[in-house]
Image 1 (cartoon, one colour):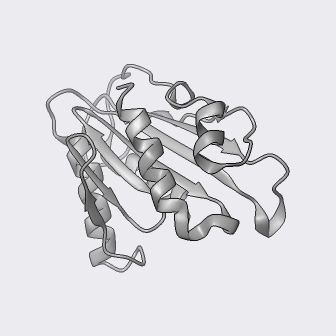
Image 2 (image 1 turned 30 degrees about the horizontal axis):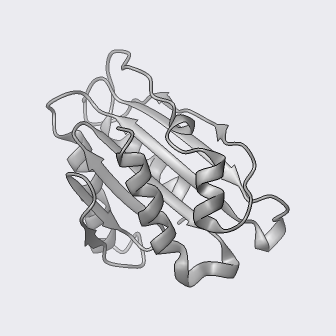
Length: 169
């Protein structure tokens, strides 16, 4: 399951209710920073927000924003990109934690190929095989790098980018 689909499914699973405060995923990383980590140039980020997310259970006030940076010149099966999904959850509800828990649950149910690996980034974090999920307070995010020529190094790139994002939360 692609990282974007997985992130969208888990975000939609948790939130419904009044309009939450917006967040813009494209403001958390600069193209130059991604280029420096990946070692190849990326195009400017393209924002695609889900906005106020609704679904079950009835938890109010979540906003989801996604930014997609395509590696310049990559196409077809060699398509390469970085994708970031940021979710601002209602204060004090613990839903940002539930987002990370959903990766453990997905592994247990066979929805993702690997058992998540705990990381030491912010309040809580993990690597799920196709990206890094992080929680800091009432904000959670998932960052994935798809760089076929550097597949063995994607996790390190994701962790490095995650730390940059955390510094801006």
